Length: 303
Image (cartoon, rainbow, N blue to C red):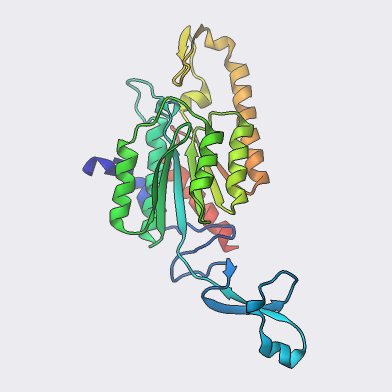
């Protein structure tokens, strides 16, 4: 159990623990005792009246107001619940890319640190965090909980899980949308190595279920910079694996152009769906990247 704490980077926790993680869109929950949910139902506390519209539930007509005004009004209520955050982490083989002897985290370790830090923050503010691990399908689902022991379960699963050799973001996100029914904050941490339209199709399914989605796009710094300068054998990490021996200097310009187009397509697609898209690479100090994003998000919610 002690080893599972390696994903809790003290620098990250020191900076993000001072920030509120709040869902920006209409979701079922906010920080307990501090904010009312903007989600209006008919369950807890009276909020306001509005004029009746065809299709409204007749049980919530206010007949006293009708008797006084001769007009039909419906009672609306506000419900006050805790934030429900689900962390979805890509554990496919491509996330295990690392360079032997080079300092730094693999993409999976970096992604797990992102997830662990957010889970820690959510539980610290007495809200509920859950975990989904996937490769080409959903493999593990840990329902959301708010107790410290639940945080330990999340860390332990991040530590011990080993994903399969393939990625299928479209299928995996479809599985997530089926398994996570309660609306809330859904955080996806992945290298997104799939066709952009398949990724965006899966994200649209999540948004269609009214999830507030945040995407952390994690790449290795080698994938971002393509620093290779001599004949190199590139080996595929996922099945079916392929090998290519080439001079990377001849490919660098085309590769970087393709990567830029790939990220731009994902960013534009996320923007169209009101999804936060956060590009990260493993050379970025996580405390800076994560705390900076959460500060911007908190500021946006407050406006």
